[in-house]
Length: 444
Ligand code: GDP
Image 1 (cartoon, rainbow, N blue to C red):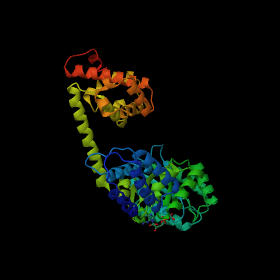
Image 2 (image 1 turned 90 degrees about the vertical axis):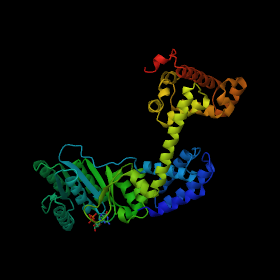
Image 3 (image 1 turned 180 degrees about the vertical axis):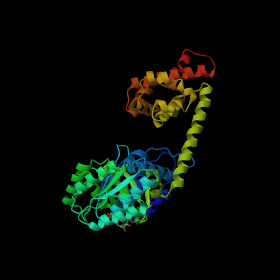
Image 4 (image 1 turned 180 degrees about the horizontal axis):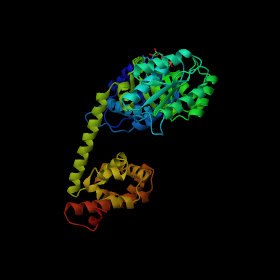
């Protein structure tokens, strides 16, 4: 799966070589490649657009960490964003409802709906130890009903006896009654498909949904149909309302566009994927694993993650060392503020640096939130290296220049400097082992 995309993206690696922060030019070049790769993979156009915009926003200005190349850095960013597009976390079938839990299977004829119903029933029986009943609601094709019964036998799952002449809604009701009476945990309802998306099918599915009140409504969509599958998902979701998608024939899908677009277009998760004709060829959809497969660059991603972790640890150690010696300049403060943003605010940071925990009150008193932290970082960025090391240099004219450069006000700079001074004083006291007036606050 996704071979094309992976090949295309690897080109990015070779072309980016400059060190330092990723420039807009670097990122534009990479974004063009990513865009082309996604379009060739048949990813929906608006999804590609959103992806590229976010990629640029995220990548420009990112510092390339030591021991990786800028290209590798970009691959990591693309990888993280792929995961996000695919849905971040795996989203398994939800059985959290009173028994029997109704699951409604919908989709076009030939998409693999009946096979997938049996695969799911098998999975719930074998893996989750549930008692499952299946029923075919395809009243127009007796062969489809027979097919489900045969598949049921193969996977050892009961199917509702066929009663000719009943409507889909009647069969659904009968299945749920049988489910209740028979002590079943789950009832899988396989609705009739049509060869094309039409209103009659939608109306029938909507009617069954109304009657059965399913806990899950799963669209079975053929990955090989690419954009059509995505449009189908959109229509079904709008007309009937889905809780999830099962993508079939992922084993034959070399492009992966449907997989990548589904979540972004419908907002509904891909829960499972069919990866073969055999009845055990059904897998949970794990966005992180899929992103790895799409990029085919798992080793690079872990390389960057490891390098980043090492650098963070190194930085933290260095800072801790300086703090112990009572040195705390504005570069240190900036590092702490950046760390705070990265760790998701104050709480995360506390666990990183023992010394910093003691500053909790100062920072909280300064009423720091993400927006303010970003402004403070911008202020420090607008200073010269010498000013950052020697804040005493910062007199009125320099402050004015910095305020203009960072788009802030002189008062904000004063507030930042005051916060820094307090923190530095405290550091000194901690460094000298004396218990200063603030030390008592450490565990507050
Ligand atoms: P339905 O008309 O939607 O109920 O489709 P079926 O369940 O009858 O499936 C149509 C064909 O697709 C059958 O030959 C299945 O074995 C095949 N099929 C279903 N899912 C998959 C899959 O994930 N991979 C592959 N390769 N074939 C599949």
